[in-house]
Image 1: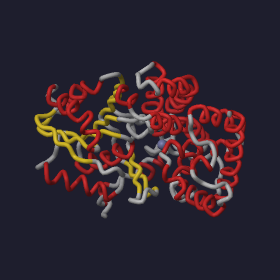
Image 2 (image 1 turned 135 degrees about the horizontal axis):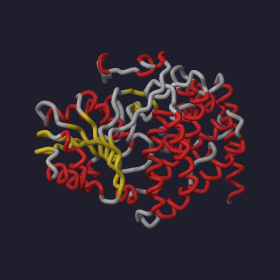
Image 3 (image 1 turned 135 degrees about the vertical axis):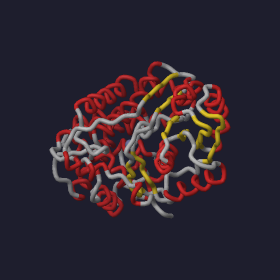
Image 4 (image 1 turned 90 degrees about the horizontal axis):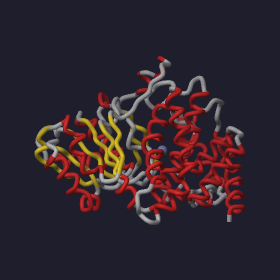
Length: 392
Ligand SMILES: [Zn+2]
């Protein structure tokens, strides 16, 4: 499968990186609340045109497809709504697949594209919108990661292994989060989002402290971004455990609203404008290990965050974070991710992959080697295992 033609590849690190300016990036608008999906068309009215394209999984189309269609038509955002199927992965193969569906259904350019679903769906549709040269609206159905507000996609190979980051010059036009939809999704996704969101502050802080640290939009972190990332962490510590209890009831509560904002808005702005560091690189390394394939993004990022804190010799903070992860049900050790702690070959592979050139691990304020990553994976595993057994 072909990738983008060269003119569609955007490299913020090459374009802005050498300039060393502070850059803060965000969606044009973010809105969150119970039942907000019925107003999607109102948010998109300024982009009005003949055809709106909505990409989602067939099951999502069944549950909220008509709500979305009605809203777009009712508020005059489009005269016709065309649905395309999302095939479950953000890969170059799947991008070709949605393009083929589009060619069969739409002549010319749609007015805008709406991504409905989890992180992989959002990432794929982001690539489609960029290819078409139209604005993107994001309707997350899970608060499982920080993808909705971002200007980059994580591409995977069809076998689920990390492939590459793809960057775009613009963020989504709007991100519309219906908390009722999120609260009805399985608890695992909101919990996983907390793992992803918890890494945000530690990575932004490391990137800020590294004189060479560059965020994913090619700039130095702003103080605003690091402050948002810190607020993200604090909201999780304050409301995370309660939100997990509330998810059992499937009702939208204050704690759930706070965690949705942390997982989606604060984590999104925090990582994009604050910067990534070791945790996300180690996550990418973990995707190379077969054992971790049944675990979702934020679950792998959770353990990787403990590894990063160990690399920084912040053992007390690592224990505090691990305790929180145990309380909400996130992985804190290798066994929790389907990896045997004695599998040195596997751990070696993860460590090597984490330190690949161009990885965000090189945003750490010190030089990182695969050996250092391996030692700290083992230390994090020990800390996580002991925190877990003390908590039971
Ligand atoms: Zn993430």
